[in-house]
Image 1: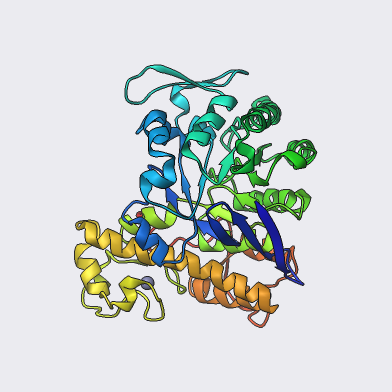
Image 2: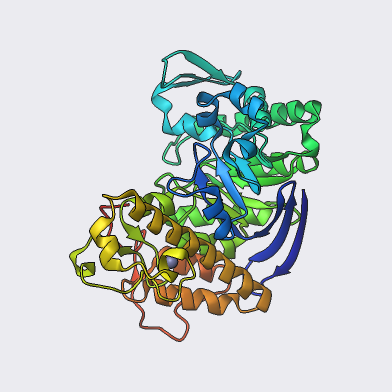
Length: 415
Ligand SMILES: [Zn+2]
């Protein structure tokens, strides 16, 4: 990997960088759409390409179960299997240890879980995770970490953090011995829950291994923790991570979360949110999310967003049509998914432009005014951005600020 910082914001910790991987260049900050089963739900690789997306995520745990490692090896890797010629990142399977934890037992050796298809006990070790990721052939691969839910408290959090450091060493050793480290780039994952002391300890240990890793992820967040704690942990990690490596926040997909993370120094993020919410009939726009299922769209013949360059909006597929078909017809799911991924790309593309032009604080104020002007600014966003020198309420002191996690959108039942 070649990683070069092209510009840094004078006010916040945001930066624009150029990451060159075996399958091309990706400009950061970027949002990575999630193709769990080597397929973005509702879109073809050509459509992804058409949106200008250059980096997507595949899921190791799921690809290992189906189609399985032999098929992947025979195909020559997941790029070929799915017809995707751009960059690919695979997670390690660690997250499933949280999301499927009913079936999982963690030992020092690895994670033991029952296959959801056959019930057979299956052991995922750090070495095995890297070996599967080698067969998948992603440009960026992730260490196996011991993940606990962000709501977990007590000694388990520290135990999981320390084990994640030990498992990182096993991943590094296996990866280096394989010789695949010249074409596949291993990222470490910082753990430590919501405890700043544990996070610091993990950061110290993992930064010490900087010569052996290509980048760093911030893991163990976005699991229902308070947002005011979430941003403080992101800020702490982004500050301590080396400036010459990419920083990846896992599981972040709401526009406000993305922009706050970027301002705190994060370069990459992924989430199923924009594609999942599309299938539930919600279109993302610069004026906030739009629930297309609501009756008010039944006779609205405008596109979702007339300024949006995505195929759905430029073909002027009407809100009325989408209201009529969304959640019933697959074509509507495709149309809204296309739009939502274009929206994510525009939010971050415009952020990159603003960082390059030295206008990122203005962009943040304008974005939040458009997105939250009517429903109120989430207080945690105001706090987080103040910590890096941007006052969202500047010039707008009477703006409504919503405590807690922020606005309840009209689609709150449909995320
Ligand atoms: Zn659009």
